[in-house]
Image (cartoon, helix red, strand yellow):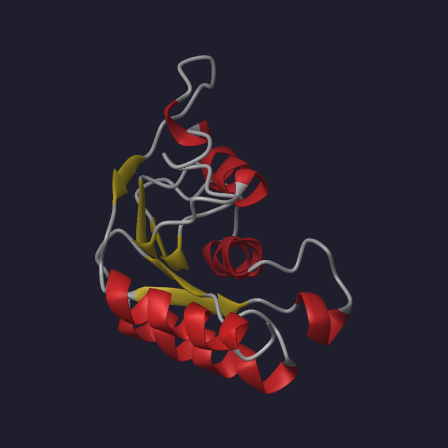
Length: 143
């Protein structure tokens, strides 16, 4: 999570919402990291999770990330939760809850939907206070 937090801080330099992510190989080795790039790249899909899952798949040589773990500073939205399910990650670990757009238990629960063919394990609250503080400072400066 500390690597993901470093990525979140780096997103601030481009005016992006400070959300960062890292994908870990089955042995726990980081294979990809990323951050929000929506503002930097004018990309509506430039969420930290999508950016990082794409990089991990390139590194892995295929789109199926069986055994991998997605670590992200904020609870994934519906798009990112769907991308995690479709990439077949084994586990999603996140810091802060997102009661306004979260799709891993807050507003929706995409990853536990029994209609889908894959349901990753979910671990929550890892360095949640630090993750939330970054977001609160970012949005506090804009409101």
